[in-house]
Length: 535
Ligand code: NOJ
Image 1 (cartoon, protein in one colour):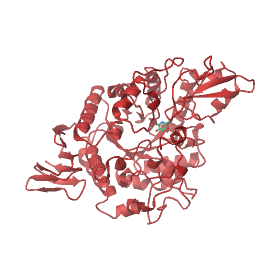
Image 2 (tube, protein in one colour):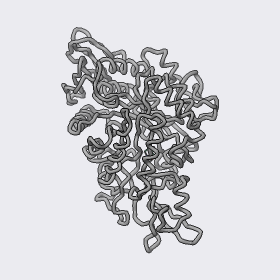
Image 3 (spheres, rainbow, N blue to C red):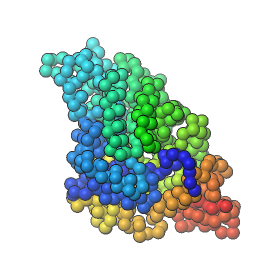
Image 4 (cartoon, rainbow, N blue to C red):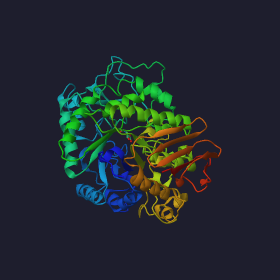
């Protein structure tokens, strides 16, 4: 089926966490040559594009999301030539390339911040960040807390004896940028053009909802007194997270949209299909639609499935609401079950349910994001506190374990850790029991998660892309969700009992081998999904 829509409207985008993908030089950390040499795995999976988390010059206090030079490659990942070679190879394999852009903050090692520290209060250098004097009692300018724990302000003293606080919504090594300063727009335009000129096809925009801050000199009192619990990776309920996101004066302010309208002009000035996807944790979900208005970005992440329980009625609401909202702004949906910031889907729901959910989601209209290792069914690794690196672990004094468990390197081959990832010692230990998860082991096993994803993505590309909207049939009341799309009927059983469903057609793909379709009855065991060819 050929679609006349742009590539990003219905694509499969594979997220590479470069530090954990493949290590080419034995230092224990993945790198760009390692990505280049293993892109065939991504192509064989059936993806259309890759998105790479940051590989820019960085002291790596927050996995590279603390950028010290956004227009260069950190030596741990290689150099600019390696980046160029990676982009060329991806394109040869038919894969588009998205890279991260991190506009909410820089690293404290960025020259701008170093200049700001040595400049005086009130100087143009300090104006690029949020520097303020302490309150008269010496405490920070307001009571905001960092999403990684602890206050969102750190005090610096300069040689002349003066002191000020600077704002950091994340780690103290990630000073927030002041987008009201005129240097910002031109500097980021330079960064966007730098990577576009090197050949990338678009961007994932980090903390896209955070660039505009309001009422900085006012303490924030949310109605429920919940602010202390605001964390990116908290195990909090979706409802509580939503209340917090909606109440804070530093997220999803109207001011952010002017930035994206300008960026859109930059993208459109290139004579090819450039796209950007916003990381915007907003509430209520309808607010996300503002990021994909016709003169802004092309996609906004839908994070609902990252935190959704495996409950059919809940999933129905989240998927149908999303599709309905997006149709109003004529933007494509995005579906993500895992990423580097949240517990992996196999750990949240277990092996069977996570395979079933993935199969169900891959039949939906829109784009699917697959986080490296998700196609292997990797769970989060259990890690000793002594090896953890996530700043949220340190800033919460271990109360939050952080995101390292979802960032453990990929197992590629062999029966002993580090499973072909590196000839050295991996930056996070890969559990000894992971041999069944390796790419080689799964390649050879027709029942593996890898082969399920490959089969699904092949059918998707040939028969579902461009097949239009879905027609809901079962909306979850009995634990069954189902819809018809194009030539397929798609079923998901989230209940703990098998369901027998009268169905006409042939079984095209099931999330496990116990699923049968005999004499017009589809038997769908607990936590399973199936695609049935009905035409
Ligand atoms: C979101 C990124 O995905 C996460 O990894 C990072 O810690 C924060 N933004 C801050 O940049």
